[in-house]
Length: 365
Ligand SMILES: Cc1ncc(COP(=O)(O)O)c(C=O)c1O
Figure 1: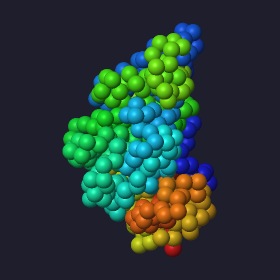
Figure 2: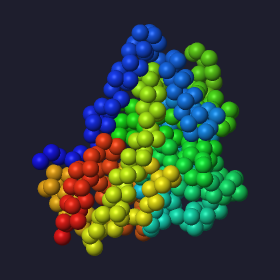
Figure 3: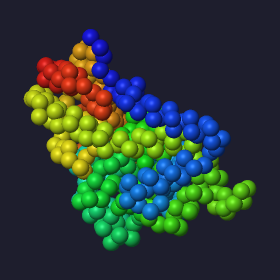
Figure 4: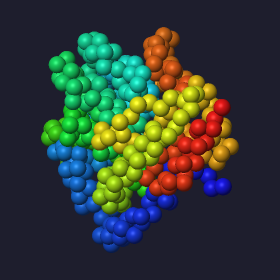
């Protein structure tokens, strides 16, 4: 029996291998390996795709978050709202800036930020909100952006799990003051190594991020902006991303088809599938279910040769390195962390594998 993997890099890449190799060859023959035409072309193509004027390629999604915060001058004394169920990347970035993360609880159904709790937190005058489009689901970015504007709070969208998600004709990444993407290989738009990007409609902020990704330089060897580093997207990754962007829509549709099958056919009283429309507002980065006996279910699936994973087991406010003397109470976040389990969901899963996953989940007692 073949194991079913959470993500199968070789199979997901295989339809694009020939064009990826051509793109890589073109970079190698150009002799330009850093911040050359491949990065510039990809930045333009991705900005056009998301529908935002500026895209700045950076080294990874975590740097994208940190540099976006730094571009907004978030630092010691600032507080930034976010959720505690999104893997800790945003908290890492906030803490790296010397600012304080303030957590907002999540909605029981979607596991995205809770609108009422957010409204209360916005009233406490934070400097920024990082809005995470988790598991591929697009949060209500349009209304939340309006609430942020009302309160004078900057909004950064974390789109690391939502490449291509759209609502009312606008994509995730086009509502925030800035938006951050990761191109880690397992992402819906994945490189063959690390990569990331910051998008913004604001020319001044785009310029700041461009400076911050390259030591804070305004010109070669002249540091005009503090807080910079080396965080460049490289030419090879950009060339590969340019090829893969052409297939993103089709691959997102494949992911939605997998989620619809799970939605329609997983029938087990021990398991709850969060309601997902799996329409345009959802690019199904992860297929997440809830089960109070999550670890037993995971072991059962492993026994059937099916990988699964937990996104994420420890909420940020409980991470040992960050836990303070009086962590906030986030009941919905905490309950979800004990129950969520992600099933295999990627564009190369075939019918037989999907069926095997459904049957194994339904057979769990
Ligand atoms: C929601 C979210 N934000 C940020 C990141 C960080 O991206 P990277 O791994 O490229 O640093 C990730 C991915 O790993 C993520 O899933």
